[in-house]
Length: 398
Image 1 (cartoon, helix red, strand yellow):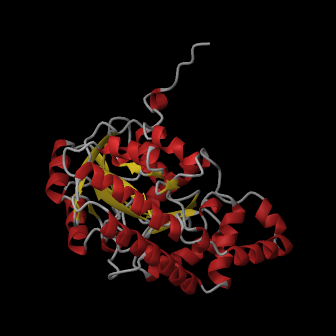
Image 2 (cartoon, rainbow, N blue to C red):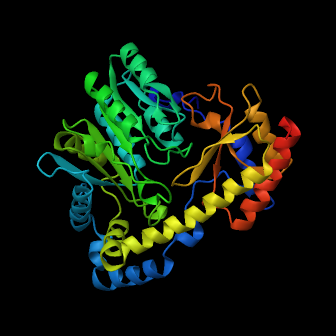
Image 3 (cartoon, rainbow, N blue to C red):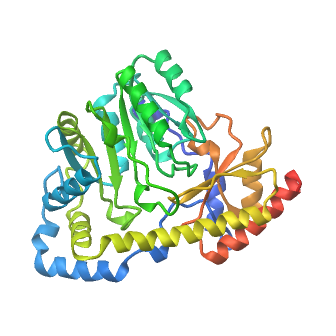
């Protein structure tokens, strides 16, 4: 049979980086290509204890249908926490529990964007969100980052050129893939541009609780005076990604549409994950848990940066993240980034994610690649950076 796919998905293709990532099944390969929390970050014993209590005390509630908006005790708790953080206004906003933070991006795009509408994102940006946006046939426009965040002059040029812009998608804290943090001054500039051109901001903050250096920066959501910021958070990086629990905050009118859209996607997020997250936050010392995570990632990030500094060619530049799970390395301009990544995995047994995977189009020019420090062991970080260092010096000199 000749299958004819819908216009929404016919243009979506498997990423070219699969050619590189397929090597990660080789047990000899050291993978810096993942994005998973560190194995030692999972509170396994506490989760086992809470799970047993849930199935002993509330088995039907765990296994039964729930409401689309989410488990009420968890929603109320998150509203309290987000109000304290300046991210929630009870009189005008609502909060929805989602199946991971990425569903917030998908529901926001589905609710607000028609095919052909423009959605502006950072370039580079998170591949999962990019694919979600592309599935709705939006006009996806990438605006490059500088050291302070999305470039405001180039954002304004994109807004002028695309008066049908519905959303500006930003990851201000420890951005995936670059590890960069948008400065407070830049956040204010970006919000002012959204006001000037009457568009909304989609603020994705899955890594905000994982700051291990520097000072906290207020969210863009906390600056929102006229209901134009949709905020996304997640338990994936602070508890466990497998429970698939995230949340979105937006004006009540927007959340009501997102609820309807979610009802036709998955009806509800799973009750067990929501109830587990609620009990973990109320029965355990959540702040102490976050402090432990920050300590783990601080040590791992510093180890990887030290390995880069000691082993890499001086011609390689790299970001120095203050939190999150990633850093971003850049080859000298004009060099073959994809060729470097292919040699790294095939000859040196170290897997990286080519920067092209995070661009609006994989044909967009970039000389960078992403490295993850949360998943590999300390020994793997040491060996992997030493191996890559040899390749960088072979290709680019000392």
